[in-house]
Length: 337
Image (cartoon, rainbow, N blue to C red):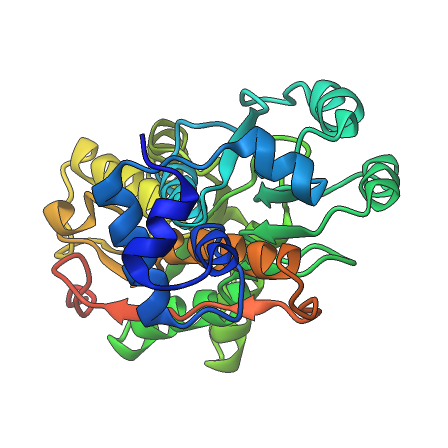
């Protein structure tokens, strides 16, 4: 197994530059960084995390707290984080809260306080006052992916604007009777995501002079089964039914489409459906959606933390990720009266 000296000789740079390049630290050119990584791979060099940690006073590990590992958005963010950390020879310690409520005590009061990590990245979580105090006492660089959190910087989309854009697409097609499947979720998750998308829906409807029917705003729990059940219940209500629905995520949009089929309706002939995400299955469903890139969001958030650990000036402002409208076959003008 090659040592750092051999990598330095192979690339013609100092051992200090090799160390900085492999750890993803600043002040190394992209060309040099690529050459060092290529030489390290060819020579079979593996950095000693324990030795590096002793030298820097760091663990060379980043903590990532995730509500669960079963959802498309979470897994894609994790892949982006992992790709960035691997390129910097950093380890990821995953704290999985395990779904409903979760074991936050274990994560925030025991595991993180053991100082096993150098920084913390949280997905779609809000923090209690006590958790904020614990994080502040550590002095760890911290960032959130997926929804704004008071007092912390985040990486994510503009939730309200995205909700407005989705709703305006339906309105421009001629829809006036529009429902919304929201994403109310488990306690402790970031409510700013579903609330922001709901506010965008309401703003677009009212700006167009359209009525927002409270009975047509139903909870979908960010899941296909729950949204399918909620949409079936909405379609079973007496009186007029919506001609379109804006779902706060693609998985909920899939549930709405299946509910339409359950009732013998066609999409988009009887019901237009739009979502948010551009989920892996969105193209197969023919779903019109507002596309975001959770892989890139995870990578950007990890890079911000790595740069700060390397001595860069801390970034105080949040990062707004791009969103684009992808029109497929699930939306069309409303059926003729």
